[in-house]
Length: 90
Ligand SMILES: [Zn+2]
Image 1 (cartoon, rainbow, N blue to C red):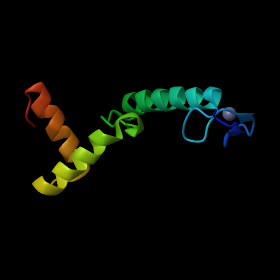
Image 2: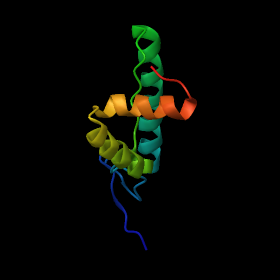
Image 3: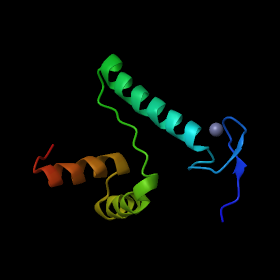
């Protein structure tokens, strides 16, 4: 049985969904993050995306390993891997 813990956002005693947040706060934060990321790209005209690798942390670990081996920084390695997956090279 999972014990209830205090949400770090609203302070209510609930079962936590992730990152120390109750389900309501967790989903609100996710939606806000997605909206900010979309607005950021539209407003600034830059192609920046913030990605939470928490659900698939093993992918980020593999990217870091490859980045170290291929002497790229992690963002460039992510672009490189995506480019290869899509058959596009920068
Ligand atoms: Zn909460």
